[in-house]
Image (tube, rainbow, N blue to C red; front, side, top):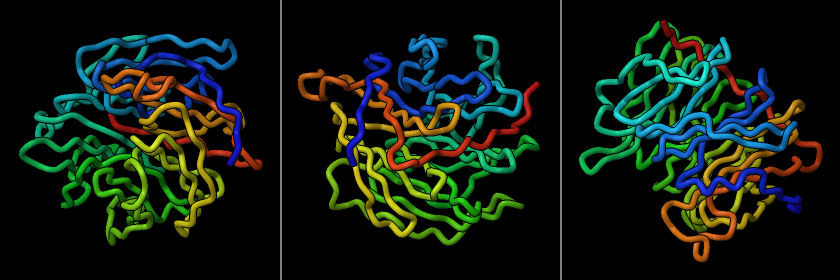
Length: 292
């Protein structure tokens, strides 16, 4: 799959992650997880800026219904980013010993949020509901719960488990938010690198970033690979669609404390390319977790 890749923000992020297009602002946000940084790219000006620099990790974020960002951070903290500052929202007490990783909002405003494993336990998947309650979404322990996405009919949730080299599909109950019947749809154990962030396009295809694999790969809902795109960075961390018509593809990468001589001359940068073959993405759902 040939595309012309453009390096749009050479931020040299330790762990660039979680790119998300903000349609109200027509700008893209993404994080540098361990440095607690939040970046914003404006394609109209072809310019980017760091809008948050904090000492608490920022694993991921969703867009709230009012346009603010709900930020999932270290020590189980969930904060709201609005008007250039963070406001505390809640603390997930059972996650204070770890940090959040990838997150996603569902059609009803819930948020599914994964946490990183520690020396003592595996990662968990939490569900934050619009009534303010926080529960574990399942009883499964994850070796790094990662990229998520919904099928077009909203009947299933995809979830990546990085160290298991797998992408799962759950049955998803839109009315209750319950997940059930986990099964593997992508077994990537023979692939170079590990699956990381992902997104689902308007045709239902999965786009999966490959940490230490240097690519983004595209798969049909049946798991058949449709193509892959190589990047000048070993650690390709996440992919999303953006732009007014959602026909731009943005990809984050990581330097991860290494050197570009070994990690690639684009490691840690944000990349963009035109979606191929008339493919487009979809707006992500917005969260509705209550804030004061």
